[in-house]
Length: 141
Image 1 (tube, rainbow, N blue to C red):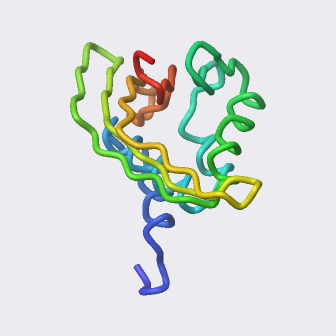
Image 2 (image 1 turned 90 degrees about the horizontal axis):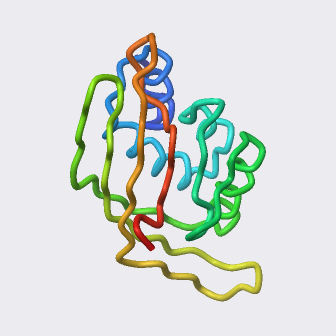
Image 3 (image 1 turned 180 degrees about the vertical axis):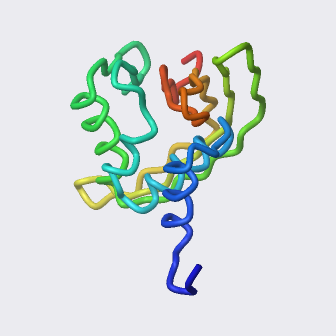
């Protein structure tokens, strides 16, 4: 590999090769949010996935998921996430993590979200990669 490769490029190659674990999918979300790369982020979701855009509200289509993710990327901030646990059964994985986010709202004011716990369900694809089925960054909130 040339020295001009950046970490997101390497993550993209891993995803395209199908050699990605559920933990790496969550780490890829961090890379995609922090880079503001919606196209990259959308590759981490199954076509019929859903995303909890806020507690009690689900985005149930690729366009709705993209819009929910844009809500984070438009804040031009930094997502920090730590995977806490991965439970696998057959081709499914439940991944719990803790995350925080700092960015700037449309009004120019700082936004800090801290101490959130997510619960996500991923499915292993036929190529061995993992994709989100349910992305619930709000956990049990």
